[in-house]
Length: 453
Image: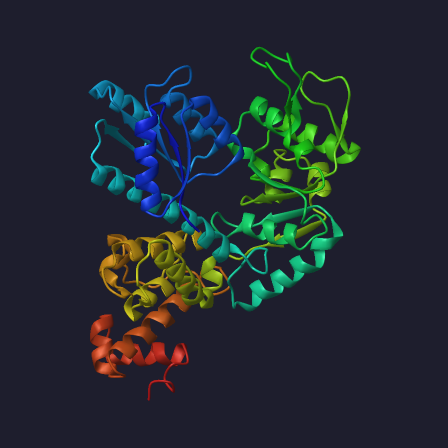
């Protein structure tokens, strides 16, 4: 599609000159001599670039710029003026103008700046489309996995999605709790309804109450207008309460009442509002322990916890690491317009031996960094952070997520040393700092004697 340009200048000759230049460059042009008319165009049509005179009667270029920023954040605005000063230039740039051109302008400068602005807008549009494509899975949510436990989890999610029951998602930070909630939402009967997410730990009681339940006009100082809460706005859809265990006892009581009565009372309101929303909660803390210590209400827990789904940490699904790595590689190579196609074996070995406390989110950040730093077709060890490059020990966590015993760790280390020593027991004993007889005893103890003959 052609780049659409809006030209605004109250001088007829200047306007005609700009129209001629832009039409010749192949742009689709709309023009006006009035700032008021320009704003009406912006309110009804989409433009990629706006070229506007600064000094105009009644509504000037800065007002056009401000309204354009409000209506079309991605549209780039180029200011043109015959009264150029450093102060006015700085002011326009601060307000978000792409460039500032002084009259009499040079044709080549106008062409060059307009082309740069249109290319920037095209790139933003393309990136947005790519993000949509990469996150879409048959128009829904894409969860990348080949792990058996995760595949079973997704099957469970698909089965309970249409039921409408409340769900608690358990999992460490970065495992993809919100992504799973969106997956459930788009596989449910509420898929065409709204989806909202809120982090309960990021707000004070007052702010969280206001966000969830809204307020009436004049309910408190500064409440100049009515505000609808998320419980009301999300009607017919899904509301995701992340870190629900961070709610104060007072907020827990309010939420419990809403779930029980299916209605809420906005702050300052006198008439209850009906609530039709599915609530899915998430927590990375042990809810049972919080209930036992009195920090979380058991009756609220039972209302929220019709079904619990636990997302395993990445260290428990290491066979997903290469798959996820290449998914993120393709994603960021496309977004950054780079031709990075491979991840070196050395890098994959490091990633598969890493414990990933930040889980999938941390892996994504690592691959994004690698793509950004790579100048070739592959992510190499040099593109990893210094901490990861220096990683030369294996994780202490077992495949089931639990910590191993000392005997299990010693057996693993002895096996690793023997492999490094190519099965030479004398060399292995020397590396281990023990004599050959002691090594023989340990091999017998751990059942490694037959494996190393």
